[in-house]
Length: 214
Image 1 (cartoon, rainbow, N blue to C red):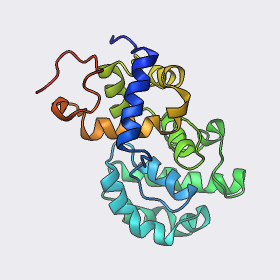
Image 2 (image 1 turned 90 degrees about the vertical axis):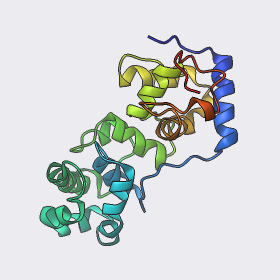
Image 3 (image 1 turned 30 degrees about the vertical axis):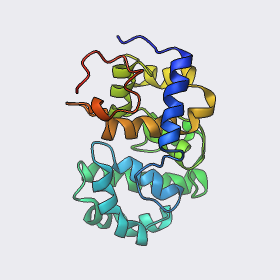
Image 4 (image 1 turned 180 degrees about the vertical axis):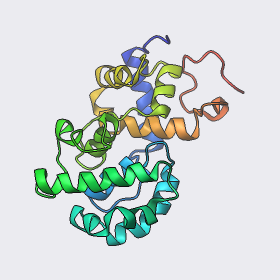
């Protein structure tokens, strides 16, 4: 496994990320905590672009748990049928809408333990909501972050939980609020899976990846 980069190097890397994009944003469109939760749940094994295309009209008519229940599972399917696993995701969104009303007064809870009790909401989804809506420095590790973390030495780990812990334990705290967004964007557009764009990589000088491209 790639060794963990030292503190001084991580400070240089995240300072560079911050210089390039001081306020990185998630790319899923939403209007409140509920629509963010739904969008993130729908994004599993799907692209943000595809989810946004499907939810623009959906969120105009169903931006609360109550409105989502009124729309119903069949109505929801009509909006999200272009997204992978749409039938199962529709079931989960309707169920989580009901549980939000029954257990949380119709509000999205702000604790990880509460969020993961909702259907279709795992640790990664919960961390995205905690980070993006509640501004908690939660680290949502997806395939991009897992790849970047292990390839570069920024946050190596054998699984997503280890990578999450590596970010929390090693990245200087002043960068934690935006860390997962910087890493996702870096993995999505620069440190891509098959042929990383090392020639234009802003952190190339510190990266431990031995097979850099031109």
